[in-house]
Picture 1 (cartoon, helix red, strand yellow):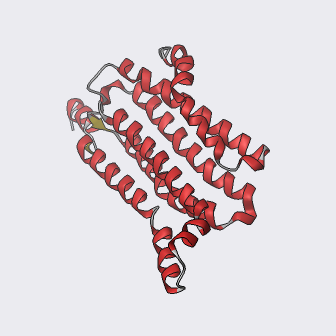
Picture 2: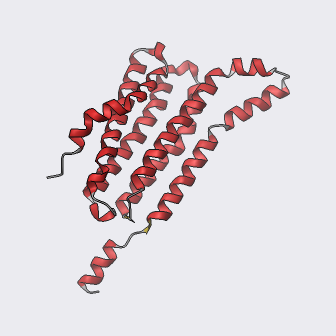
Picture 3: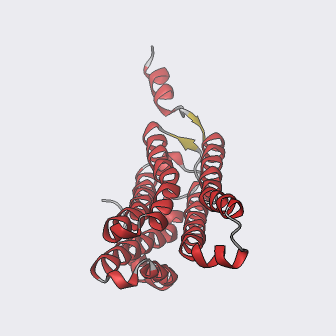
Length: 216
């Protein structure tokens, strides 16, 4: 094999960028759908026990809150991932495995959501699993953005186009970490510290100078 052939083989993508995007979209859609299954089961149980609709809402208010919260957060993850992949032209082995690791955390989130509404006695552990899982998801997306910035050959645009997204991801990851610490240190706050994510835009502006720094 000639040197040019070896170089071409190394640069050839394992799968096309469009196929990777389609696969990621499908996995996220399935994960979002799985969030509703515990509620569907509880409705079947309530119907068999002749429970009224008002009683069902009252008994499952925490479960409904977890469902809406998790749905919104997974949607946020998907939007950020979609924007990140918008300029990806090739998928290398490293990018593929980072994407698979990220999708693993997405698929896990419905399990963590179910735990948050079913295991109320293990409050600290469940909050660690629930918010901690989201933190890991955000961290993996941050690592993926850094990987793409370090491998501009995978993009169809200047890596500096990722700067704004990188600052947003830094802000999101930081806010998840703060929410986890607050939730563990102040148990009465339960999952409400996740509302700190509403501050993503102003915090991202603070991180923008750091995100603009070029690699050495």
